Image (cartoon, rainbow, N blue to C red):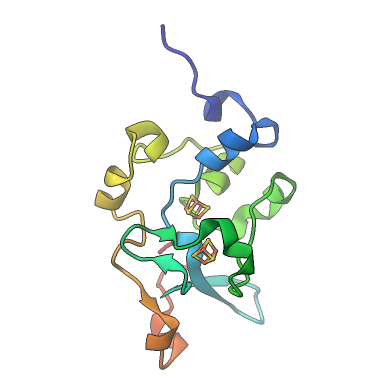
Length: 147
Ligand code: SF4
Ligand code: SF4
């Protein structure tokens, strides 16, 4: 008998900590530096990664200590759901907060990150680091909320 997966049956603010954490697809997009337009408050993603991001695995090099990284790492919490529009359009938290279904390549559906990487929906091998930056303007991605 088919059972409804928790992300379809349980609202974000009612999920257990384990469910909440498992929603993260590990794409690494939120670990890219962002620029904000001072006039419009629009957020622009760049292809410049946080120095703690492993660009091959798209994982944090020290996830447990990320808030001591000095990189202004933010914790996504349930009380900030209404502010999730700064996250990438494909971010699971934003997708569910907007009432949309998780994409077919999501690791919770496929079992691992391969389909996500194959679909180009992660930052795998596609970023540079701050030490490489001469002019930030050259690193702004065309689509503000995508990487
Ligand atoms: S963008 Fe969202 S789903 Fe992707 S790594 Fe960041 S928090 Fe997780
Ligand atoms: S400290 Fe880790 S989790 Fe936080 S932005 Fe950097 S790479 Fe991402």
